[in-house]
Length: 368
Image (tube, rainbow, N blue to C red):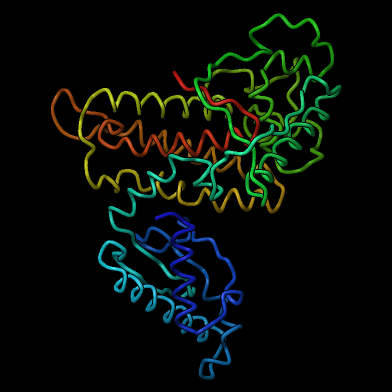
């Protein structure tokens, strides 16, 4: 059950509950991070819709209208599920005091979410990237000051994100093996004589692009940082953690998670084990973040703020790291790893991370 599919279900429920026109229903992204209790997602449509259907309800206070609308939508969601058969039904549909409709998925619906996320472009943007042309990319070494290179990188990310979610078909993303090599770090570059060029020669292009897109303001203060030893404007003389190949460097951590997910997926396939059923309690945090991905990308595009995408990818990486380093499943000395029993999850993480990094202009290594 993808966010777009769930939005369509709730939209149909609202249309049926109030006999509205399609244009009367605002688009509201379902959110996993706002779900109450053990629900998988919630939809805050009722508070947005209450004022539009007030004339169809009995008199009452604003909160009464909101809760009444919420209850009717929840009732119709369950009714739609009953009409379409048991496979389309949810485990539970409940309204809450906020007027949010909270929905708990079945194991099959949770698994379908992971399968959908493995196709990162289609999952995050609603379409495949099969057009022709090239994605925007400015050579950062063409900048003079580091601040100018930062503007280049942010402009590239904004253009890529806008192109991905825009109306026209975007060009295709590259496929195939990607190495850890960085052409600024791994070759003798004698033309890196500007401050921006020297910085690239010290930390590499991938770390530079993440560093430049990670903070919010377009004009950062001098010596501003986004974390411990993470300067917004790293330099060749003071690169901070951006020069390290450790978890202290967010760019390394994101790229390592992608490589680990793909490697884990290959390991899982090599084991030949059948995937276990209903391991969803163990992967709930990762799954919730995956579910919120399309809405996050839409917000980053609408606000033209690439740091929203960066911070989302970091949160997904942290949840994945927590999942993969958790205890193995089973008992005995040769316990299979979680990835071996739940290969759909690393495939989903790899799909979303690869797409997100690509939209930032950052390479995603495919092997550890």
